[in-house]
Length: 456
Image 1 (cartoon, rainbow, N blue to C red):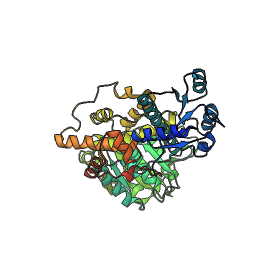
Image 2 (image 1 turned 135 degrees about the vertical axis):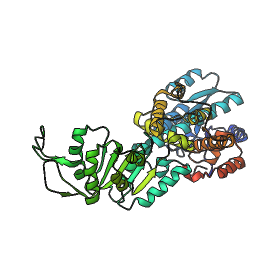
Image 3 (image 1 turned 30 degrees about the vertical axis):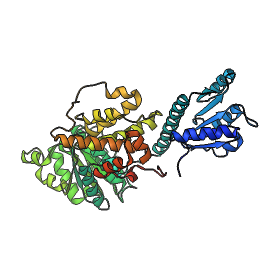
Image 4 (image 1 turned 180 degrees about the horizontal axis):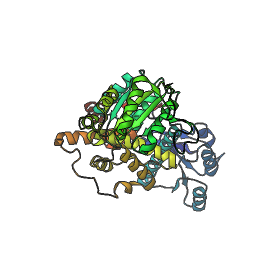
């Protein structure tokens, strides 16, 4: 069923008929009502259009209808039709929450433009309300939002999904900010271990003299300052997952003890001779090639091979630019919910600017830029030239650059329009067949972007 764009309330039948025909010619779907009381029965909080209401009517007048509509949903735009002598009434209506008013006899083009602006405002309000409601209940990103739509990340997620039900240790390899922490958490939260602890430790951030105590714990009196017993990270992660970030930073002497824990699944607290069984899944992460470090003697070779049961290489963001718009949109929605702001859809030019950035900070930098965009507005994408270039995809051919840009623009439009083909056609100015052809070319399906509503 086609959504209603305009509800028109006027007690004169001839005026209703002319107005409905006029709106139909402008491709606006309208319903006419002779009385406000009848129209109010069909106006719900999820009404997607606007109300055009005459002021002078028997029964409920325009101001009374306005009050009833705003009580249903204060963001429904109500436009009042008034006579030339009703300026004071129109001002009162605006003060009481009307979107706007227009005098009779009205200018046709002026009315249509006013209605279209009001419809756009209403749809934006509904979209932001729905997204904020979803994100307030946000727990973790699903696979598509975690990885994106690029072929390289789909391969990563496919490999991860095949490992979720196992207890296999995993080595994540990727640049700083590429998303290793998010992937480690996803592995834990979608595995049978999710009801137990996920324990993360940055091996490069803990002082060398404390890291052994952090990992394995200590007994009271084990060293100066150890005035009470401490449970280590491995014990705390029993039956769960331990995430060793920047494992390449672990001191060589401690690597020997870690190897023993990996092989025996037992730990000994500092100052104790008693072994404690631990059932943990270990996810290690590195931003440096451990194999090369082990060949140079900077990382134990036996530990490398023990950690490297399953290695997953996470590609940097610059190598999967088609993921940038959907990830940016995702992060912007989270920021909008957190800061109670609106998330303004990106323009084609802004998408192109994101694609032209080299993203040295990877996904972390993209998330920060999305938050700044929500807080500061579009200027957040214009405030720095650093890292931006007109070379959208590095060493890609011109054809590849164009394809990547086109796919990203389509993705962004479909995401903004919630998978609605009609809205995406309008957003991009494309004919239906052209849009479908381009979606087919880039392997995009509207179902990927739809929520639990019929967007068409």
